[in-house]
Amino acid sequence: MSEKFVVQLSEHAAASHWGENATLSFNEHGATVHLAEQETLKNVQKAARSIANQGVKNVVLAGDCWCTETQWAFYQGFVSPKTLAGVEFAQNAKTDSQELNSLLRSATWAREMINGTADDIFPESLAGKAAEFIQSLAPEHVSYQIIKGDALLEQQWIGIHAVGRGSERPPVLLALDYNPTGDDNAPVDAALVGKGITFDSGGYSIKSSEGMLGMKCDMGGAATVTAGLALAISRGINKRIKLFLCCAENMISGHAYKLGDILTYKNGTTVEIVNTDAEGRLVLADGLMAAGETGAPLIINAATLTGAALVAVGQEYNALFGLDKEFVREVEGFAEQEMEAGWPLPLEKWHQQNCPSPYADTANSRAQKGGGYGGASNAAGFLSRFVPNDGKGWVHIDLAAAFNMGSTGQWAAGATTVGMRTVARTLLEKA
Image 1 (cartoon, rainbow, N blue to C red):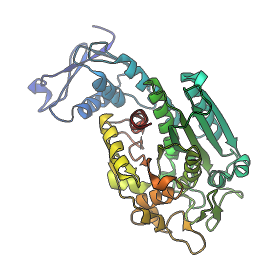
Image 2 (image 1 turned 180 degrees about the horizontal axis):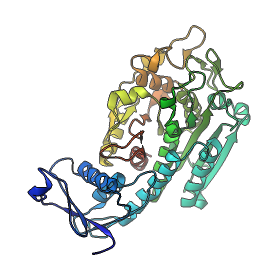
Image 3 (image 1 turned 90 degrees about the horizontal axis):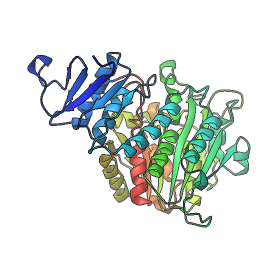
Image 4 (image 1 turned 120 degrees about the horizontal axis):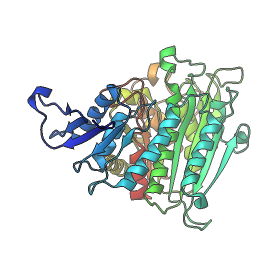
């Protein structure tokens, strides 16, 4: 018997003794995944998770039935925070090995960041690791700046500084320039903005212990846009793109921001803090203004922003928002083409007024649990105050599908990387 656990793919049904409509059967060398007529990729991923749950650590995918997408679905189901490798891909005429390797490189980096502990992945380290990762892919085309601590105030990045000032680890803004044109004066074709809250205690609006447990994942937006840019570079994008990561720890101390504080942003917007746990939108506001200053006609931001998005679309979809409805529909299509699920939720200009304040232009939320009704749309409405051109060419991705607290039939616990491919495809199609 081979020492390797070999997994084959079959277009034929499993023998009846494996159960009715079984998608998985076993033999002396390993297992066979049987394709179903519907939800093929989901069933392949579930079969991979079942194999991993048997304690199998390393598999070889073999045979001519495997293609790029089925192999990637298997990989996504097989890996876990403890095992990010362990899948040897099949080499055949249906497989784009270069694409698989690009997906693997970007997804592995994103998982390492999102699943990493807050002791290891803190604001400055996240920014540095992101810059190093992108620079490793195109060293001659990448430059960056890390704006740290009180230097944020000097440049009027008020939100990042306010959220992060309660931590001993200073907040930072990463401003990275991927410019393959060789022209320092070339226009910026797209800007990416990611929420990089490396740990979210909730601040003085403190989370419960169970609600705080997974909050190392709250920098998932930063990891997703960085990995998406890396994937686009690997796929050959030759446009100038700027990346802004808004990184902070939301902690409690004598220096932390408080309920009732009023922040005055660079664009003059005043914001009353009614919930220190609605911090993601506060840091993203700075990143969106920085993106707008580049003149980029395309702006994509991603964030693990609201529990309301999870309630609305579950963990199978990411929620999509934008005032530019045609563009949002295009992004929904790009997500589908990349085998990721995205679903538009409502956003209108009047959502900007849904968190009123008697003391400022707006509050950062409503003083109700979860931000009240329509919380995800109201958060998107807040963000829309800080984008240029009345939101044309801007999409906000609320990453409901990016992280699982526990394992499911399809995913191990931890980061999923869902959203990474959507970002990459949008850059390639629209930048």
